[in-house]
Image (cartoon, rainbow, N blue to C red; front, top):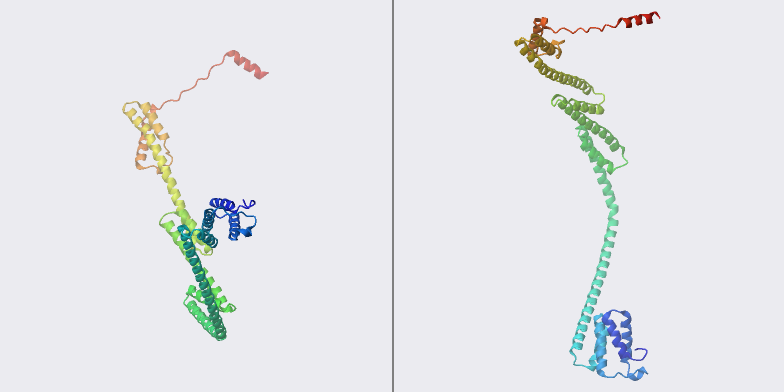
Length: 371
C-alpha cells in the first residue's frame, strides 16, 4: 500500500498487525512515518491521493492512537487523538483517552520530580556524612598520639597484674586459673619468655593431674569389677589400662596376680561342679542296674542279682571314693557286700573247646616241617 501511495490502506494494515502483536517495533515505526506524512498538507505529498472521506481518516487516526496508547506510547497516541479530535470534537472515547493520557503524564512527571528530589537529598546527605567522617578522622589522628601512650601504659599494667595473679594461682596449685592468667600475659607481650616458661610447667602439671585422674578411674573400675562384680576378665583389662598410664606402679601388677588366682579358683570350682554333675548323672543312671539287682535278689534270682550289682559298680568311678556323697557311698558299699555274698552265683566264663584236626592233616604238617 505504501508503494502505491495509499497511506490509509497501509495504516489499516499496520493497525491490524498491531492487533496481533501490539508491541511490534517495525509496525509502530511505519505508523509513525505515515502519521508524519498525513500531517503535511495534501499538496506537499506530491503524488499521494487525497483521502476519500473525513470518516475514514477519523477511524484510522483513532485506531492508530488506540494501538499507540495500549503500547505505552502516550505522547504519540495523544498527537493522533488530537488529530482525530479536530475531525470529531464530540467523540467521548477521544476525550476520555486524552484525559487518561494527561493523568498518566502528570503522574510520571510527579514521579520524576520525586526521584530527582530523593536523588538530590541523597547526594546532600552523602556529602554531609563525608564531611563529618573527615572531621572525625582528623580528630582521631590528633588523639591517636596521646592514646598510644595511654594504651601502652594500660597494657603494661594488665601484663603485670596477669603475671601476679598467675603466680598466686600457682602457689595455691590452681593450675587451670594460672594457665588462664599466663596465657593472657603472653597475648599482651608475646616476646616475653616468662609467661611461656610458666605455661610449659603448668601444662606438664595439668597433664600429670589428668593422668592421675584416669589412673584412679581405671583402678576403681578394676577393683569394683574384680571384688564386687566378680568380672575377672574386665578387671584384668582395667588393670592393664592403668599400667599403660603408670607403668612403674606396683599396685596394678599385684592386683593382677590376685585376680588371676581368683580366676583359676573359679575355673577350678566350675570344673569340679561340672564333674560333680556328670558323676551324679552317671550315678542316677547306674542306680537303674542297682534297683534291678535288688529286685532279682528278693526274687532269689541270685545270678541276675550278681550281674546287676556288678554292672552298677562298673558304671561308677570307685577308685577315688572321696568324690562320692554319703548316699552314693552307702549304695556302693551295699553293692560290694552283696557281691561277696553272691560270689558263688557269679556267672562262670564259657570255655571254648579247640577243634580236633584230622590225623592226615597232622601228618602233612609234620612232613612239611621236616622238609
